[in-house]
Structure formats: structure tokens, C-alpha cells
Image (cartoon, rainbow, N blue to C red; front, side, top):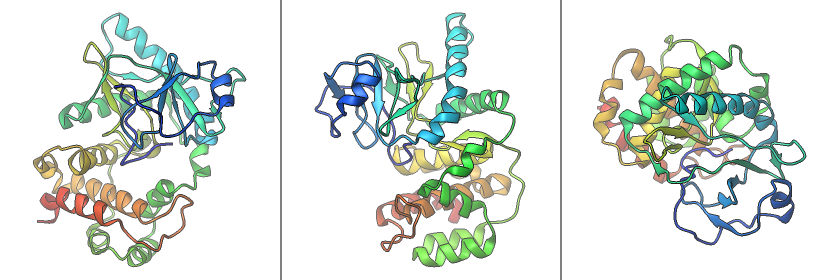
Length: 299
């Protein structure tokens, strides 16, 4: 699974792939070996034939998530033909043996002639449409979420967990910003939990007709308000959106959504890929980026 600050698999000029694709992966996804990199993320995703192949995919997550995304992608594409679709989802593609992930690689249908979307208003609108569809498609919390032990899953549980555990994690992080945000967190109802995309800001493309295409879904079971706050926070911190985008989120319930979104991002940066505490603490780059983005909140 890709998570911030990487993940956008927008098409572009052909460059040598940073991560060679194993022959077995090419064979099982039935694509030629003539691959080219797609810009965005960490530069590891490649276009092969009519597919985008991406490494670092979690087989357990794909096993429950892709059967949700695939029929939704079909429905949205059919609506697009009839002129009713306002959002699309990249179609996940299984391998010839029926598996969704082969040696850590997953596949989705290649979307030609797309451009990356970084307009915060359009990103937020896309998220609302997507999450309304997710809410219709998935009515109960997927049990597969419990199996996740990656650093983003650990950070998510900390940001929403008991105050004592959160405070201890903040102290271990060595981050003054994390400690400040812990003090800001309050027990407020942010709305019902549902399936949301927890990495939307870098994962929306615009197709040739201008319709948003959502890629690389990072699944969480949290309120849609939190997911929108997270999207806008990332848009400001990493994708050039103006800090004024977050000003409406500086009070009330929206403020608490933004606080938890920021805690989640910063805590994830304090953990290594196994979910264990890292000795480096919060990344200075991330802390500076989020500190600047959060200035309307912290003023």
C-alpha cells in the first residue's frame, strides 16, 4: 500500500523504472517486459502494457479491498458512459492465477491522458463523492483492517486511542508539535465511521474529460470529516495549496478532525515500516511542512 508523501501514479514521459519488475510478476499479470516508470510517489510504479504495476502492496488488504473497488469501478464507468458519473476509481486487475498481489506487486488499469489533480476544492469534492459511494458499498467495518500492522495503521490507532498511550507516544517522538497537538485533542464526535481513503491528496487524477479518477486507495474506518481534513492538510503541506484552505478548520468539530489528521501523519513519520518506534523521531522535513500548514490552527 502506498501512503503519503508518495503514491500518485500519474502517467508521464518514459523513464527507466527505479524498481525492476520480476519476470514472474510480468508473466502472471500477462504484460510485456517493456515497462516505463510513471512519475509520482517513490517512482517505483510502472506502466506495462495496459496496466500500472505497483510494488509494496499488501495481499491481505487487497484480498478484501479490491473486491469492493472492482465492482464500484465498473458501476462508475457505466455511469460515465451515460453522463452521470462525477468520480471514477482505478480498476484493480487480478493476476492470471486469481491473486490480487504477486510477490508484493499489484495491478490496476492504466488510465492514459490523465493529469494529477492538486486543486484542494476539487480534491475535497472528489472525496465527498467517493466516500458517499464507499458508505453505500461497505456497511460494516471490514475485519481485514484489524490485520494491518504497518506504521500508518499503528499511527491511526494511536491518534484515536487512549490518552495515556497517545501521550506516551508523543513523548517518545521527541516532537514538540506532536506534544502540542496531543494537548489540543478533545473527545468530540466527528461523525460515523465508514470506509475512507486516507491518502487522497496525492492520489486523484483527471482523465481526458476532466473527471476525477481515484487511485491507490489507502483504507481506514474513520469519519469522512477526518478524511477530508487529512486530504486538505496534505494538499497544503505537500502539494502547494494555500494555507488559507485550512482556516475554516480552525474551530469547532472541524478543528478536532484536523488535529487528529495531523497527529496521524506525524506519528506515522515517527515509526519505521514494521510499526516499531524509530530512533530518529519525527522527520524534520515533515514537522516543518505540517507546522507551516497548521499555522491557522495553532495561531
